[in-house]
Image 1 (spheres, helix red, strand yellow):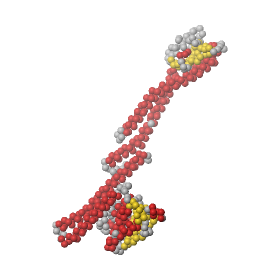
Image 2 (cartoon, rainbow, N blue to C red):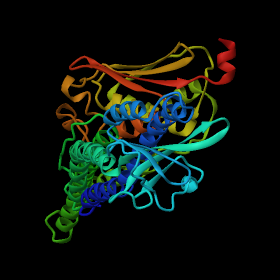
Image 3 (cartoon, rainbow, N blue to C red):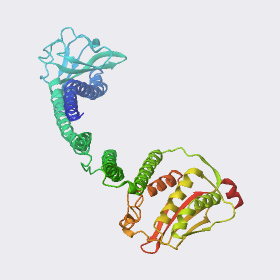
Length: 475
């Protein structure tokens, strides 16, 4: 298509032009000539019938003389640009507008046969060899007392009709040439509106196929081709973004795996070469154990994201009491909270509140949010978990009074491996994947999660859940 489509279209245009010319030059002249001949014959026959009924019949009825009829027919012949004859059934020429009247000179039309016209009223030939060239001849019978006394024959030179036909054909040829030239507009339109954009799209696909997903092109069109180009551009940008994310993802994973592995190897090498004395083994083994826990947590988070990052993810949805899940999840942090003297305040709507969701995944959302709240809260502070009902939705809020999130970082916290500058000093074991997992889980439920945070004041994460059918009926 890239190399032949345009040539095919141009070739089709020229084939159309050639066939149009052949058709016009082959069929139109014949059809035009036949049409003009029939029309001329029809007009002449009407004149011949009029002459036969008004002039020639009076001649045979002795109402008028031959000279008077000759004068009238001479004038009419000049008007019709034709030759008018009166011929007896025997073939004797009674009157001819091309020759002077001479009664004594008998002129015979050899082999004259009035039935030569057959089922028509005209013929095209030399009229029994009485003319040197073909003539259009029409015959109208002259009747008197119910008998055919003779025939009015009008002859018109066929060359005159041919000249009129040629004039019309010249107009047809000129019209055809103009139409072919005007049809070039279609070729120009195809070139500018179809071929050139297709060339751009084809070149772009070649660039994308070679791996250049950052190649950009523009098609100024609002039709299907413009829409195709826009979709192709959008697809390339999405793929390029995915590739950039993949590179960033690999770089972040490599960095987060390399750091604990480097620490583990360093401490073990120090133990083996005697740099660390045996009495300090326990201390550094605990550090190694913490690093292995960090690697385990990172691996589990990656596996979780891999399972969540598919559209149409299967959820084990069901009705469960969200209040019970909140209480049990908060209770699991009792030991961690005691170390920092942090208390968790629960403000729950009703004793029981049933929602429809995947209980295991929602429990993981709560665990990640509470874990983050504890990490970034000050000692002797309070974390509040609150539920509220709005428009058949249950909203769960996890609020702390910790360091908060800078405004510029609030849109980035959902990205994988992202850590704000304020969190880097506190979250030594964090992977930067917790909030990404939370976002994926909530989105997979068709719900939303938002954050409200002020630096130095604290953060509040709010996500929505669908109520169970039983809870909706109670409301």
